[in-house]
Length: 301
Image (tube, rainbow, N blue to C red):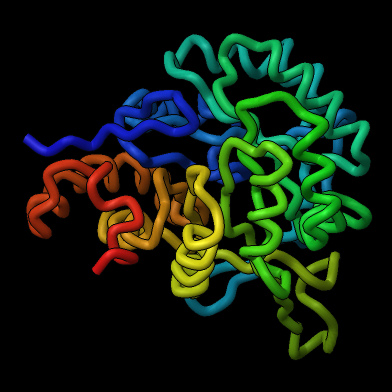
């Protein structure tokens, strides 16, 4: 019998599979399709202090091996999430959930984190300092190690800082967050991309640019998880183009303790359940008895 359970920032997970923020809503929609308690946990939709309608339409575009999105952090605001969304979630999901937090100022990050930190359902705060689809938002923090560290110092633990790949040195930023007290690092968020409408001769997205996600990102995610594992000693949540249980094993060998699944949920709503169910088979195929034994395993030969 293989062992799939891992520990993320002192909290146990039955398995390392975590649907990524923005691709799984607040969970209860997917609970109509299957029992979402089979997941390790999930990261719910990015939450800000005030309600946000998001960016104008169109804000989704197709690309080879993935998609572009410029949704722009559409959400009902933190107070509505606590009053309405979390009680509905509690009826269908009986594990700690990861709260994804975004903001437009240091004060906003702190306020939203403090409110969600007080919720018993919330096990981790995933502080998103890397969203490329809002103007003046989190990515302005995430591309500067000093600013990223400032955000990390200001919020309560346990906190996992979600980093942008749109930077010169992901390892430097991860180390700055660790030095500031982060409990974990989550990477990678989407890469900025763009598509043009050949007939209209203008961008397909109303926002012009958007975040690129999907399997085309996977090699970049593996490389950045590898580099961050070399730079920090705190747990890493790896994500970016994960489509299969084999991808999960690869990211864990690169250094991830847990793995988020994003765009795959938008293609196949059963993607995460399929990966959870297939994980034992893939572990046996590669003679893996305990997932904890392979975290960062590729660094050691």
